[in-house]
Image (cartoon, one colour):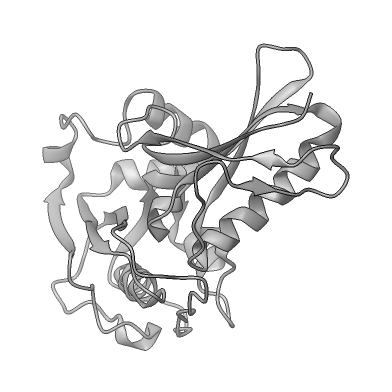
Length: 255
């Protein structure tokens, strides 16, 4: 067990009242002691209203349609994080933390949930799976990523991906995880090979803006130094969208 590092919440200076919902979901694998989760040393009074935790025997979940360690998703985790995957597979219990809450002007909700996750690692948790960013970490890896003095960067809670497009030399840069902040993800289409880094940096700035409460309107333009034309954002997607499971703001890179 490590010495607890209190987690921090940050204000969202661009936030305005809205009807958006924040969605959180985590799977914690382990064999848990029958004690109160020690979340307070991490700055968390416990799970916020709207977020619940349910404890399951692992064998009871293996046949569940949404079980995350089987199929193509399970293969992804096994290939990318074999040690964490094996620890998760071998764990006798799975605690599912999930729910929705109304969009808020600060991230106290995230601090509180992450504090509970940290506490669960102290009482028998061995791995945590975050399906929204397709990440499975063992206990030590999770602590290194999130238990950071002065707070883990916003980027730690999100995923920026690069996929090739049908046109040779063009790429699709896109994000996952913005539902944690009640905001759309981002999609940048048609990015040339030599501008992938620029597009990745743009994604980092855009997700930070939204995490701090900003919102994009359909048709909103973004000026990017070095590009001949502004990028125009178009809103799309839904919680059922196969690539995002979220709404998104899509920009098409200049030809």
